Amino acid sequence: MIAVLNGVNLNMLGRRDPAQYGTLTLSELEGQVYAWAGELRVTARCLQTNHEGAYIDQIHEAIGWSRGMIVNPGAWTHYSYAIRDALEIVEAPVVEVHLSDIAQREEWRRRSVIGDVVDHTISGQGPDGYRQALAWLAAALADG
Image 1 (cartoon, rainbow, N blue to C red):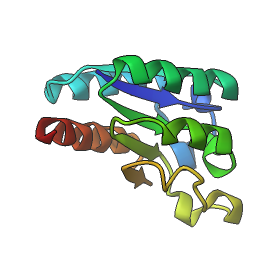
Image 2 (image 1 turned 90 degrees about the vertical axis):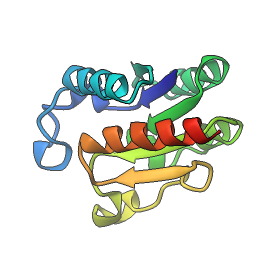
Image 3 (image 1 turned 135 degrees about the horizontal axis):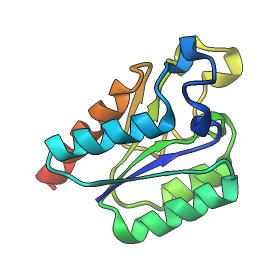
């Protein structure tokens, strides 16, 4: 099972700056994730929270049941060392995903404090970034 952990403000997809984040709602994105997972013959479980401590709890809990993680912490990506520390202890492969290209955004968004503790990063591919992350994990899990 692959954990797909979405963070702060991702519940507002479809309403929040569609030019940056697209028009899909979180529910629609999760539906696509489940369909892509099925095509890749893996299972996924999507979770979302706007509370940093709850996000950390989701990471800790997923250590017990997931074989890989896709994480999109939202704005926490840029400053949450607590989330970085939680991800650092994950032994399963972790893919960081961002709908927008954070390297082309505001200066403060260009740095990911989790980038050095994840195994792969996909940024700026819109919803397709989640499909790419699932495919990367499916291949990594098949090899391992």
